Length: 104
Image 1 (spheres, rainbow, N blue to C red):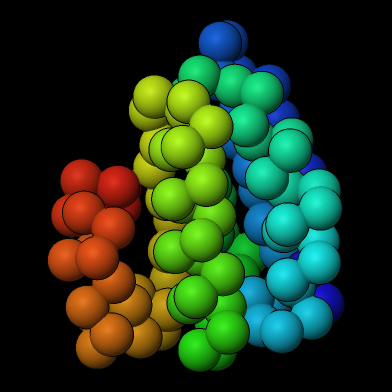
Image 2 (cartoon, rainbow, N blue to C red; image 1 turned 30 degrees about the vertical axis):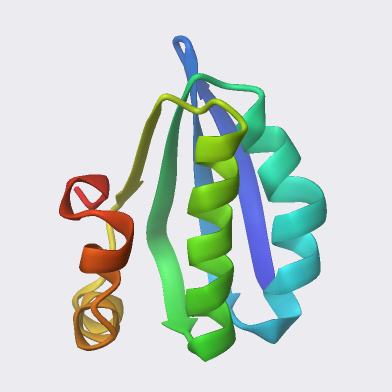
């Protein structure tokens, strides 16, 4: 299950995610997170409380980033990724796909 909280930060928004990014997260991300994040020019996707990401979650994250960029989000980053999730991202070459500069 995935939960999220939108935190206003100046001209931008921090989307604090909690739980797992898997098939159960698809509806929440597409119907709630993307619209909430698309309204800002700057977005930080906060992974501090993400415990697990599966292959569906990887695809969903790629879709999320691409959609936000298409919707005009100018500054986009993914922050506070745990070492376990970072390892998965590295194995799947996600930094090459999304750009190294998106991770901080």
